[in-house]
Amino acid sequence: MKKKKHIFSGLYIALCFIFFYLPIIITMIFSFNSSKSLTHFTGFSLKWYQELINNQEIVSAVYVSVTIAILATVISTVLGTVTAIGLSKSRKFLKEYLLNVNNIPILNPEIVTAIGLMILFSSIGIAKGYMTMLLAHICFCTPYVITSVYPKVRSLDPNLANAAMDLGATPVQALTKVILPLIRPGIFAGALLAFTMSFDDFVISYFVTGNGVKNISIIVYNMTKRTNPTINALSTIVIVVIILILLAVNIVPILKKSKERKFEG
Amino acid sequence: MKHFKHLTKPYIVWSFILIVIPLLLIALYAFTTGGNAVKILEFTLKNFIKFLEPTYISVFFKSVKLGLLTTGICLLMGYPLAYFISRFKDKTQDLLILGVTIPMWINLLLRTYAWLNLLADNGIINNLLAMLGISPISMMYTDFSVTLGMVCNFLPLMIIPIHTSLRKMDNSLIEAAYDLGANRIQAFRRIILKLSMPGVLNGIVMVFLMSISTFVIPKLLGGGQYLLIGNLIESQFISVGDWNFGSAISLLLAVIILISMRLMKKIDPQED
Image (tube, rainbow over all chains, first blue to last red):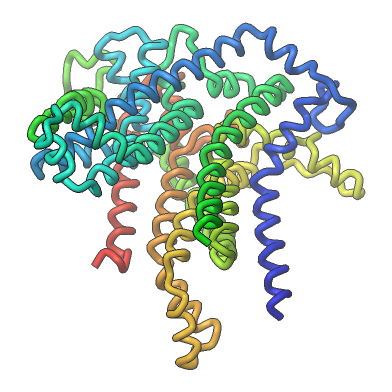
């Protein structure tokens, strides 16, 4: 009886995973197809990858996506961490106000955030392009950094920084030597979230960009009118990179944990 | 320690300019006319009244209908999955949940694009059907393809919160229920379902929020003529150029979502 139940639940889990992963796997397989067909695999070839490298538009889109993701991650991680540390010492009114405002981009539908920024940029009169895309990305990444760093800051013993300063540390030293190392897991989690949010973003980039500046998502959106195997190749590269990053981030701690357990046992 | 207080100052200014002002601008556009140059401010409700026209209000109802349908399917598929996962050993659970999360980190456009290969008229599914002697079914550009795309993309948002609350549950409570004579259905209804309610509500809100506001999935899998609220907003800003009307719809969308979140919080038993 018990075994039968296990088979059923295992089967159900497997079916759901096929539903999640089948489209992704098929995309990857057909990126190596030698013909343009998306249904018949006619032979292995790297033709579409070659075409990808030679396509100037796609190469520059990859450049835009990667550089914006890196810049937005660095800036929003610094801004978010600094704010989270400051928040824990702020007065209640300010704290509540700022946390509520910070929640707006997280809770609001992306499209509303996107058109808000679009209207803002055109009323200030900033030319739409790389700069506006970067500003928008910092805008929606920072709230995620704050929400992952702030709980860590709050769980710190407030006396720690005071103790450091009593022992002669300057406020900057107390910050870099005591507080930052303790909240590092939160900062890493926030930075990872910021990077993937920025790298994957379509809706907000689509509305705030201009002057021909396009990221990967916008290119894909423009190309989907016809099925195009070059997109399969691009997808495959993006998916492999993201999965490798995630596995590295997630599997390493699990392995570490089990190793520690082994030592304890 | 007082020194650290000033660290919030940059973000106070930043968030005011890039979060608060854009919202105020949307509201300003929604209640005025005069095109994109808001030089002559004139208060009006015209934009909201325009939304009540049959063409637009039917788009709204269609979005709500598909949003509810997607949420319902996600709940029916996601709850059993979250429940089965929560029955495994801790380490297996971690891995399975990682497996559920990974697709979410991959670009939504790429994942949706992948369905094109499968669903197209001469796509893989129709080819398999042809081999079985079944005539091809046209699946692309229908409610079916749009709902399928939404369920596939948003299902993890349902599974994760439900799994989190199921995992937190104390197993001895279920054993106690059995000891007190409850049968399996009673134990499920009275204990498991009740205790996982916060996760269920959370999942419902997240999936509904995402599916009612998306415009990428309907555009890719529903075709150019397929309109949901998101597509309506997009067309007002990108092609039609009626920013006032577009802002009014966005404002309505934001309000609907705020209200549904408030409602869910009210029902949530843990809030009391």
